[in-house]
Length: 229
Figure 1 (cartoon, rainbow, N blue to C red):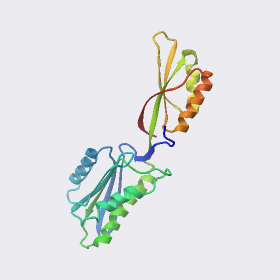
Figure 2: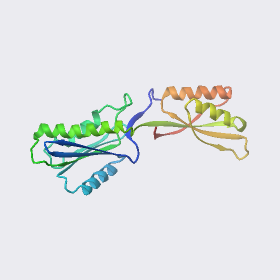
Figure 3: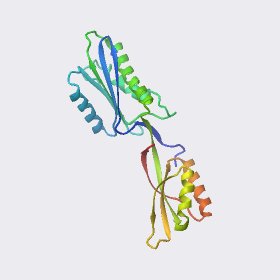
């Protein structure tokens, strides 16, 4: 089993973070949205381009997956490397509220209205980077960032007469109780549990179960899933 809890940072579902930045009369409108697939990210970019037809550029980047293995950046007519790359770098490097976590499942779109003054390559890199960094800081201030955690799902068979006590004890130990099923004869209940995926959490759970059952029961692994917390 892993030695650590698998987790990363995401935007809360359904949230849009919008910020603006002005540089030498050029206007930069930044939008952050959650995106859990490349298709979703592409749809967000397309929709924002349609919503703001007067913007001269619609530059973007996205990062998707726990390992952030899906990444893409687009300059959309800006000089190569001056827009998409700094947007992506801001998504990858900006620190998250939870120590050790990284931001993912996110698309950042920066729409630019040209103000008549050329910013130069350095100015564009700075503007696009600052735009996204500011949007991420706004997300922190708005408290719309969440930890997404890989959860271990388990089941635990318990005598019906003991099920309520066991559930209460496990909840007090920060174990999630997803529900309880009962056997046809009404003698055995099956408690559905979930804990963050780490060896320490699993060992702690099994110790509690052993204590509750006087060593006669153990939780059985049933799979894993990702969950916002």
